[in-house]
Image (cartoon, rainbow, N blue to C red; front, side, top):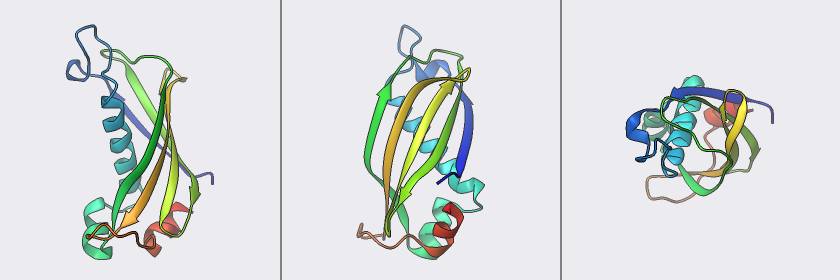
Length: 131
């Protein structure tokens, strides 16, 4: 699948350790923000998916590789793309770049579930927009 989403942001002091290097767990927050922004760019929100379609999108697995560190005041870009879809899940590739250089790469499997946490079919509106 070729649809992709871009999210740009800057590293602040609060994101770093005492050496000015981004703390590794913060990358997961950045990836989550990029996925949320991807949903918003499609004209949806996580809130309306929950209210109107009884759907939550949760992370099932995340495999992340840290290639080079991000540092205080770096400007980064996350490029997210859909690698595959099933009836109730989809997998995204999320690449974090600094000045066009890949510094981190993650593969994230997401599952659509209802409020009880039971896997459900991806809502038609979301499925169509992801194609």
